[in-house]
Image (cartoon, rainbow, N blue to C red; front, side):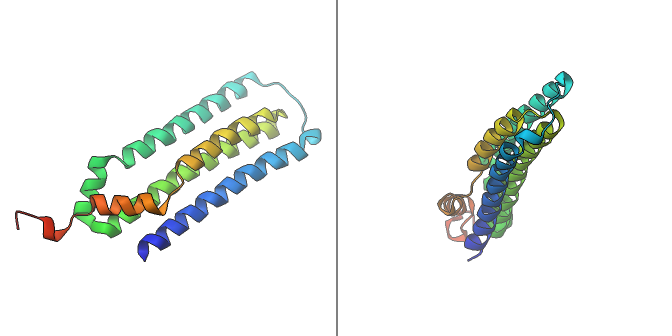
Length: 156
């Protein structure tokens, strides 16, 4: 019951951020004629570095937080509730990193008038959001794999 509730909440948030990312691209496309074109090389470098750091950081963050050893420890110490909490919290953190990537791209488009920022950052944000999308089967598998079962404890 709790698995379904938490997974649905996380999945709904990820889908909402995905829709918001796509809407930013649509706004950029529709507002292209209203943006004033101005070249800003320092901003260009800063935006590209920020997007790169956030994109690669989201992958590193997910791999760190979902490492086998860490999930096994959480499952042993906190049980299914703690593991579900960790899965949900980490998924939302990564989703918000994806949303931040999209927002940075859109703000850069507003500042420079170059809609490439929104489209490029939006594509990376979509990839991050799809990468962190929570499936119920993967969460169920994690619960089965990492939550300690009292019957299987030979030391007891």
